[in-house]
Length: 137
Image (tube, rainbow, N blue to C red; front, side, top):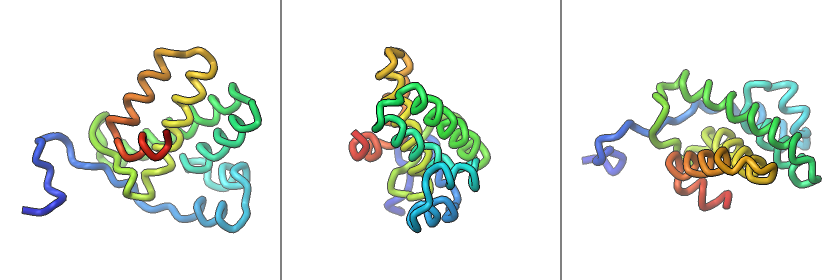
């Protein structure tokens, strides 16, 4: 028996393919706006834009960036076999952009008073990756 075998009978974890371009651009000093412009399908770029906007108090802008990253991530997950539920492990680095965008969306929804959306996104994050929910707060 493999340690990665799914004993609960649920869907297997979804592992997005690696997309190093946005990560490398950000690591080399590129801004999140540069990354989103060059790699518009990157959830990571949009999540970083959402974080920057939230930190400067632009909550509605953060919400919009996070929603974009979230939807780009859903598209990528579906292209890679995700059926609307199941694990999206934080431990697999390419999944982190989507998980960060989902967290940012929950945070911004709560900040603008969208309590139901906040609760839905926070639960989705926990269901997708308990580790991400813990790491991201």
